[in-house]
Length: 498
Figure 1 (cartoon, rainbow, N blue to C red):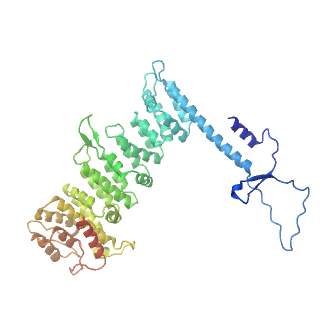
Figure 2: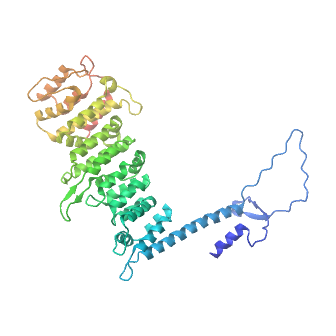
Figure 3: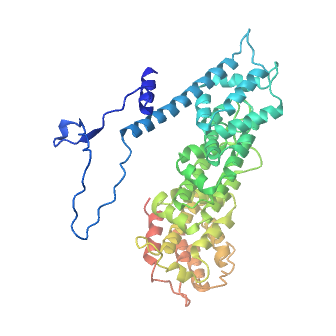
């Protein structure tokens, strides 16, 4: 303390004589250090030198800040830090003394008021540091004594306290408080008073730390739904997606020691938020991670009104939010062999959710002229004809899904028909009804020949789907122009390279 006082007095010029002016000389050798030499006294009168004709004397430049001002700024900065440290230390001591809870010292209304006023006098950084210094036991006493028998806080006082805490604490310290109780009331304050970034980070923390048997579980998703989409996307991109997906599954035990159950409402609502993200790679990773975690929990029974089929449908919505871009990410980076995509398709087929698969297929075929969409070169020279590649990839994954469900040829024909029914009108059923294709470039006679070849076991399931998905010219011939190589390569990557 004596040293800082001396520095402050010197910087302010108190108790010191006028210092000798110095100049800094930089030595020729870097190892020689810096030498401080006294400046020679200025002459009493200096005559300016004569200037050549036409020259103007330069304007004098004021000297920059010197060492004294830099030292003063440094001392001022340290003074601010020291002041904050004193406030934090004083607040910690005050709160700890107020939380003394024993046989001879119980926390009363005056103690709680002192704590509330102390926290209210701190800025967010100071408040976070003070609460962070308290142990879980101390936090537990604080929250418990809000309803204490010696004059706890009434609901209005508790609401004011939670408003103060929500506006000042970090997500980590809010999460610690929530685990001690009053989670519903504190979460309500966080939802309206905490900064958006704190709300999102808190939700991501709570999904990993809590389960649906805890109070306030249903409020967690609301913290994300009310935040700006770009902020949520940035926070999610920095998370471990498998860990997040497990938290979203809501695995819990209804009774201690009983069977585990799932609550899927948070996962469904989160996927709806994720559909508004801008990064197709993040969407693709989320699609794969959530679908894989959902499949891995098939033995667990969901409780509540939200079912696995609802989650499957939201995953379809995540793909449809930017179909071509997300499927491109799956195809070229995240799931090039279609392993996880085909498993999700299989789950969709078994759940009788063909409509979403048909609509996705229709998106990849493209609106209007299918052939023009298929043969469009795209915008990325490294990945030409993206629509053709995605269509081959999707068709290959669908064939794997059918293989995983049915061995019987007639049943496989039914499943093939389900995919093409909405898009093309193709309905080849086991009874041998006519194939209906109301518009080109698929042509009745060629599609019927493909299906009949499959019925006669002359072609495989994969060849049948390949022949139906590959576009044709208006006169019914298979298209062999632009995009075919991309279609074929993507299809083979899925159905042949295993």
